[in-house]
Length: 140
Length: 209
Image (cartoon, rainbow over the protein chains, first blue to last red):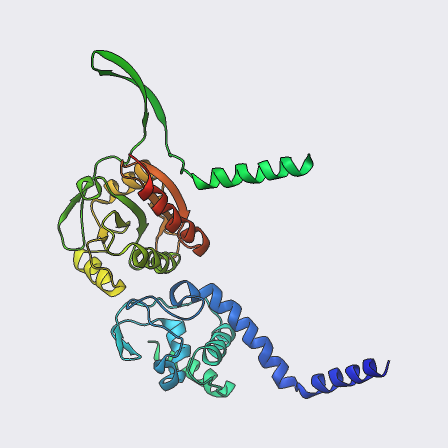
């Protein structure tokens, strides 16, 4: 009985440790994971390994580490032309995702930046939102 | 008594698995042949019809390339955002398995020949890491490819403006034996089915003609 009450106390401590903002971000990450599977994993593969020299990897990609704030626009508008990732040049056109909402794109960004770079990248929600707004106003 | 039956059942299953044979797809018919003055009735199986296509180097490729060989065919297009990249990742696994063994060939056919030019297919082939011999990328007249897909390989390929990328096609890997008969169709986006294909390749290799 004593062990049970100790366990219960331990659980309560763990839940208390999760602040509201952390719970929100867990929700966003799992939504991002689902959206990644639906919209990105066909090409970049479920494990982010890409496809040979045709589709760049996300896993351990220096491009993500160096250009995290370009990600929202990349997802929205796609990409064309040469792109260097981990020392290799890729040149396949990436289609845009015009149908995804702002919130969905930001969820994917958060998931991708947590899951794939060498060190997980946490960006302020404001900076991601601003990046997305900027790419819309430039219209590229 | 019960145990004896069980042991026999197990033996039977084991014995059957030792000689796994693959089905032969398509219609078959009985035909009468003349041999040494006698008429013999034999079964004739459906085969992949002869074809004339171009590969990623612009060279003409016909059924002669795969004569007496075991090959896997599939249908794709280079700008396909849906199942193709997964299929190509899986086909890359098959390629790595058969590389260097001249019994095997892989043929990937584009279903968007207007966009997928020969230089584009060449680039695609190089970037995938294929040597361009054992794994070739084929193009030709649109109608010819669609008819070959449908009638030769039991696959679907057609334009569809409602699909992302503009085409609908099956993600099948079609296994063809040394006598041009289709012996298996596997889902090219399912790693387990592709594992099975890689085993079945060697069943066909061991098969007597």
